[in-house]
Length: 465
Image (cartoon, rainbow, N blue to C red; front, side, top):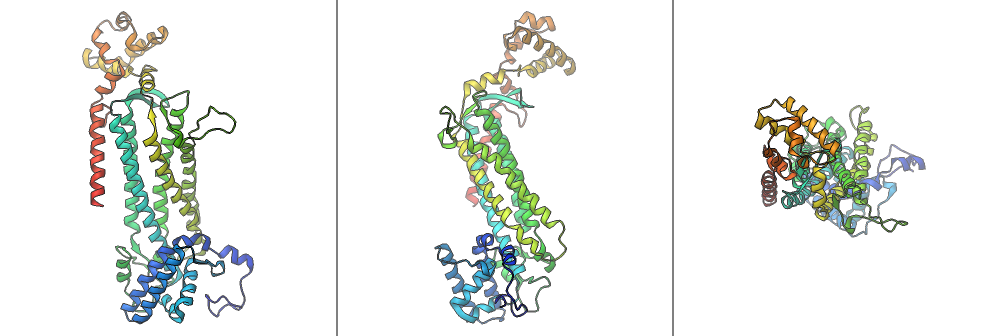
């Protein structure tokens, strides 16, 4: 017996294994809202062009609304025998309105249908992700404002480098999130063309109006080439690439939280809201939320790699391989959105250990560069020479086991006789961060201005909608 959706070419049912490998409803059921929306736009266009009657178009639209309600209320039965969301919807539509349902597929194919549905889905994902990243930026900027002058160690090579402020550190992630949002916005702009009406691969002989359906679905224009329209998955790849970079940024921050919350470091604390305990060690408080954000990055990067591998060998136009474009991408987008929300919650929740941060900021002779800068600025010494003098002074402080600002002036002058007591004013961590007034520097007044600027910008975005 042939598959009733395929028509009369097939006289036997597929093998059970063929049905199992071919079925996609378990994944593409998540496209039901987009599929119904696109079908309503297509039916309205067919009626406007006189290809189907207004009455058929109305019945189709009403039936599709009923199906959308059934799915939303959990009353719809998805049938694996019908393969995908498109056939499930069309089959149910036929049950509701009769033969008129068969007119819906006029002048379209599942090829342009799924390409349209998935573009709509990815566009919705981008909008949700952008909103989540904006909320992440908001809480980062708010905490940066609170801690514009809270001194902490800045690191290179995970070694204490120079003092910075905690607010300055948080604002670095605001900047990263801004670039992430820019990449998603770029991807959205490029994907916002409609494949609908490209049909299987060559277009259609029916007098359709692709501009009408594109406008109805919020696209900027129809795609210009029917072959490209049904076979392109750049829009998924580009969005996954943006997602992978965003997830990488979150993972870097998550790694810092894991390090900072360790008792060996102790720079910040997370509450019970974002930590877990141990089944055997009662004293443990594990930063599991941060660790899971770090781990989920692999899922996002893996989805990008997986789809690139699927697409790299496909000739034009549509190939069944493309059925594998959705599951990994959907899981990746979901993982990213969850990770952003988790990091947003942790930033709002964390408590910096300010006293420990300030002590740590001065460890490792972190103000050595300030000493070298003083030698250049005050004694007009070439920087390379100042670097060597400072190195000798650091060696003396290390040998004596004291911080730079506690080293006796006589010891400083033994390395450079022209050094005066004035130098002691620049060797504290507070003085160090206060001096970094160059644009983008960590001086508290800079951080305050940057945090306020970001909060103002984010508020403007919200008002503009």
